[in-house]
Image (cartoon, rainbow, N blue to C red):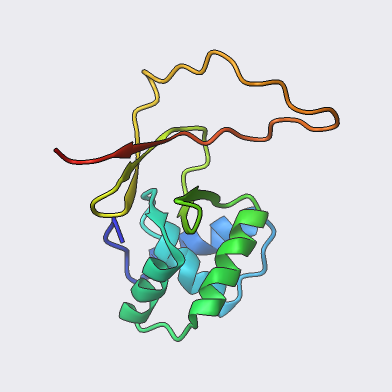
Length: 145
């Protein structure tokens, strides 16, 4: 994981409960524990299902990898996370919900926020009839030299 995650402190569980309540999600034990790892310390982060699963195991939480995947998808559907797909097979889940670009570090497979102030998108192709653009993801791939 690209961040140190908080432990299950009362403050972390309170933040997790508020986060889930704000989206109208029922705070099950597993949702609460994963939400506390994601937002309990107030920091934004990018996680994969596997890195969140490892963090949960390290924190002593009994949760399966399938449950982590299902919970992350539920969080995305509720508007709590954004999924960013890299390489077609690797998905990252971002707790920061505003529009912003990302750096993808090819050597470490880490996804981090990129500064948005220099990014300019001057135009997009016209969406096909009957559709609209819902989001534009900008992932800038980096290779160390």
